[in-house]
Image 1 (cartoon, rainbow, N blue to C red):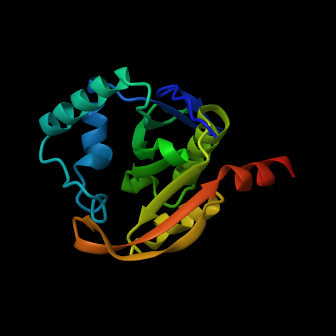
Image 2: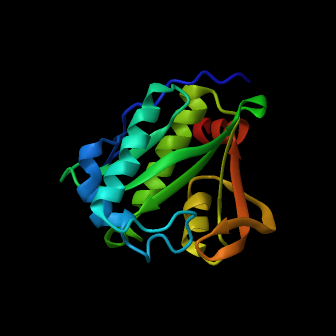
Length: 190
């Protein structure tokens, strides 16, 4: 299976618009998730100290959109236009047609199904339009809710890599989930 990168395109769901980020999103991003140490507890990056840090970070992410292999969406509520998180391809392996996803959502929107809704849309896009054969994600096993999001989107638990990642908690285990195109199409054509 060959992938054909299309770049970050706007995806819509019942409640969300997944769209390209802009430098002008710095205020919402900093306030809603990037500046919150609780949100970044299990992530690989420290919370941003200032909104200027978030603006600089966004400038580098926006510049990356020139590469069609960049997939980086802001998660926006369709009814209010509020930016509540982000979801991205954080790693790719063209030899096996794999995309690895990472995501982050602001605390006020946890446990409402938004992350699952965004992840399901990204999985569909990557498999149906980009041609990914494998979409993977991983999480620190102590962040059980992240694993539930992956499972809810049809990703299968494949195992835990002991001391397989580094996060804000130091060296941590990494629970790996993935969905293959065959699994996806079997579930979506039945």
